[in-house]
Length: 148
Ligand SMILES: [Zn+2]
Image 1 (cartoon, rainbow, N blue to C red):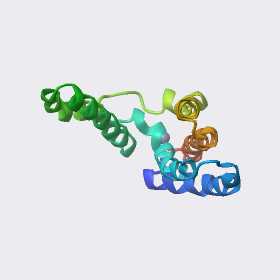
Image 2: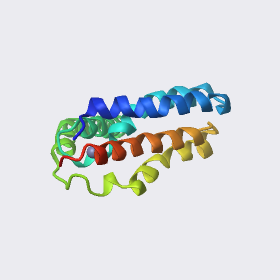
Image 3: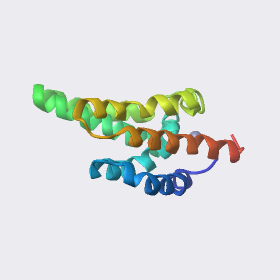
Image 4: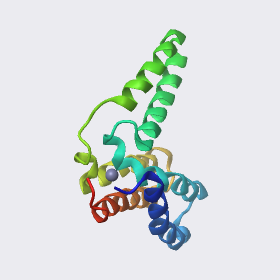
């Protein structure tokens, strides 16, 4: 099984040329830089189904951070539960290489960026496409690295 560093490197190798080719189609520069940030995250995202992985930690930190903002807005006492939520998100057991290692998951996980296109009028259609491809590189590399 390729490690997270291999997945990130491979997702950049595949997606950066695509990003460079599509750079002329970006209307807003933020979409280009957003893609550069999201490529490694989506390159490891399918491993979110395995506890205590980098992907799980990135997702757990993101969810915990978003909840922290919500709690801080509503009630400060809720902030005390955030370390517990983070711990549960990182350690929660699940079947590895299940649904998150499917083409359907790669496409569905990239769709939220399309909503930014409609909500904020930022051209994130290419961001969505590139993040889906970054996630697909993960599945491809897992299939090539044939160990369980
Ligand atoms: Zn994997």
